[in-house]
Length: 132
View 1 (tube, rainbow, N blue to C red):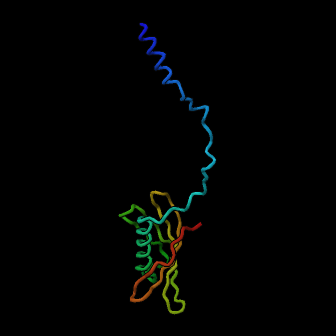
View 2 (cartoon, rainbow, N blue to C red; view 1 turned 180 degrees about the horizontal axis):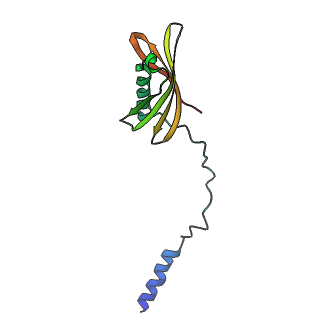
């Protein structure tokens, strides 16, 4: 019995000594925070941009007569509707400006963009920005 009491007091000192965590808790003022940066460009967003570009550039505007063009990207699960395409030929360069929606896992958003025909018949996406 005496050994048990001595062990209890000895171990009690180990457990209780120097372990007062709450009284020494202080706010760390050396840490600073800032605003959350915009979402980085991901492979999914690049893939969606390419899908929209392909839909915009392959559209026969004479046959469409203002009809919306649905698009879907099976690799990302995104889909949307291109509701406006306007073609211009400023200074000899054929460009198409467009508006589209995008339904993705991040939600629904509207985008506007511009793609132009550059050397050897290649279409280059010059802008693809979230609208609003």
